[in-house]
Image 1: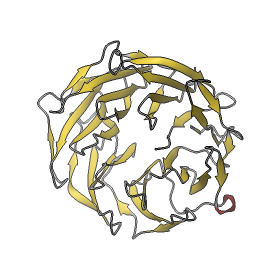
Image 2: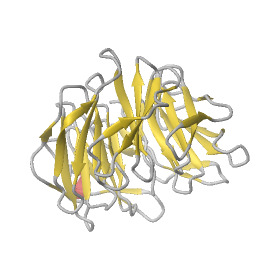
Image 3: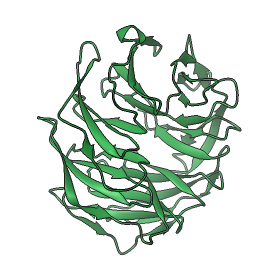
Length: 331
């Protein structure tokens, strides 16, 4: 969990078990020096990368017990970038970051040390305010949401690290709307985009080459107020954090991309939920609430009533207000 308050500037780390429900790891929270706002974990759970809009990307080794050890003597492993969001590709070879300029940056990952090496030059994006970035599970596409600027569509080569921006933009449904959260299903067939103004989730088909988006006839689907982040959990459910009204909207994902509301949806969270992650057992969802009350909330994904979210634990991630702004989980 990234605690982005300048008075806290730390990463809180927890383990989730049935008993105790959630426990802080030894040494947590781990001081970062600069306010963190972006987190990314390598697929083999070797390294955690922490990005700050104040400048730089830092690396931590993830130990076998989940605790963190700072890498590179605490110095940034990448400079000249101030990431607002970043992700690691499915091969674990590349880290892709986006800043507010807006531009994207590609770094090669040293599997032994966690060091980052710049791959090519920064790639300028279209006009807008960067809000999120995802890499599709097949590694073929990178999508970057730009608020009122819509969503930029990029292709990516996981062998060479070459990233290419296509000459097209997914525009918001109205010029006053803004696109924020992004997600894709495990088969990289659909793109999910949260959009304010209409307080909805858009669903688009991604063609086989990753070059054409086609909005489904059943899209958009209504969410709560101020939809921020979206996640596809276990390939079966879609959850949207609604920052303004403090809820999560939940849906069942059907094979044709259509969505149906889950029993009990929407589910109440803390104040201003802005990020959400699923654990590697597909059992729990954890939510970062930038407004606190609580900072971090954990739900179980019900199996008796499939997809329903059941409250499991609420936690403080540091000396409030922590401004819990991002969350990541091991794979």
